[in-house]
Length: 404
Image (cartoon, rainbow, N blue to C red):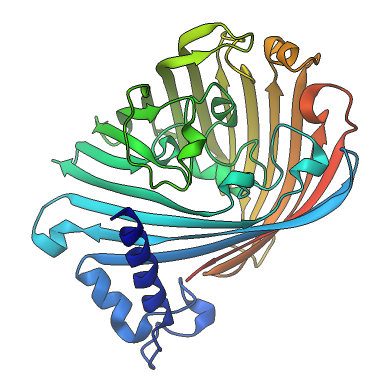
């Protein structure tokens, strides 16, 4: 059944994308939100009936040009595809939606050349993650525009410890959820690994929101790739997420503040082999549009459980300037900084004295057309691995992305 579901999903998307376009294709391809257009009107008809297919392709080419363990280059790519279902339009179930998605990752990264903690190529999933993964299968019911209950297979970063501003970085230091939380004894998972979960969201008013989530966790969570293991085992535990969001206008400019707590309960071990049954972490984020189209942000995460957290403290900051270059109103100029303070106890377990790894990144995203962008970037990784034994590294990269 699981294999059949995955095959049907892939086949449906392939057929949709492969349809021949008539003159009613959504206008010139340089103006479309999706490169394949409206499929002769079929896309609009599907969306009107409550079925919205999507397919995105991303690729990163990277080159470690100095420092690190060695020089080298690599390319990694991913396909993210699926369908959004609106059951109000399909069945009359008001406020009920569903998402089904899969991800295919392929290629390699220069992370082994750099030798650091953070990967300079964010869509690389590690050796075991470069495969086809059944990602999301969830359903959400909304009540009275205030309450929303979601249940199914998903990752925490769909709802918690994340912001769209992070998604412009080529480095895992920022892109995705707060990276330090993924280096703990498996506290949270992120795109594209889905686990059993439930999330309750309460919109207090237009500015204030509160949400609570519960997610499956165990000490072999990454072995659940490619996402077709739907079992809940006796040794599985639960990660609880609690987050408060505030989205005010400050001096008539948008801002966002969120603070949260994540705590996992399951049987694990410390770095020196002692038994442990929980790990917690607090985190927060703040961003503010200081002048028109220029947003500054910072976020961080902390735990005092150095015996369980590889990176007890992470502090990051960045800037995102839309339309900095005259005549390029949809481009983004971005800059990022991340400090990742490493655990002495983790270092001791590795036979190393460790301090911190720091990543600087500067890039510019050229929005060539609405459906396609290219983003050159340069990263400077200070003290890769945090040991002081690896020279500072420079990584050049280019990210392409397209919507079909």
